[in-house]
Length: 99
Image 1 (cartoon, helix red, strand yellow):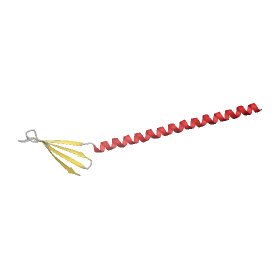
Image 2: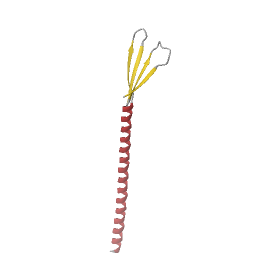
Image 3: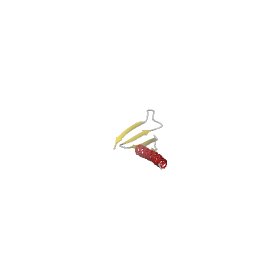
Image 4: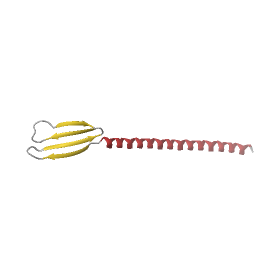
């Protein structure tokens, strides 16, 4: 009987070790998944922020004796209006308007 008791004790100990190792592996997988979800959430927030801060540009061309192009760019909190003309010698003028 002592031999059977010893074998049973070793089997129970092995089973508990196996169970603990399996539980640790599952915990590690869950933590990895949580980290992946956090990373994806951060990525989505960054993309949303990039979209919010992206330039919205509209171009209007006025024709006449001096053709003028007006570019209106919009970002979060400000508009930039740039006036350019092919016939003007100086650099384009830019006006920033806070909104």
